[in-house]
Length: 76
Image (tube, rainbow, N blue to C red):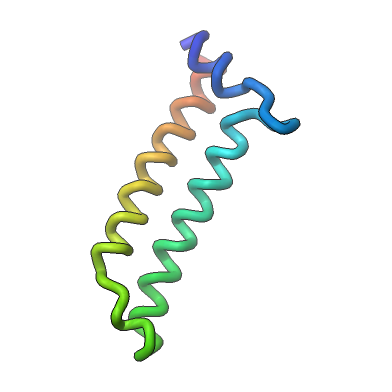
């Protein structure tokens, strides 16, 4: 776990890697929700396949799990 914690809290452009991973995860979650809402509310956006929403959600869950593991690695 020490290796994971060291990697997670390595500074990159002034912030730890886990910080950027959290931002990317948040953007993916919002994007997945936005695709679902736009498909439901807008007739112009119905051409977006549901698989896009599913893929965004799967990647978001995977990155959120990695983000959580890296964050907790400092305390375990």
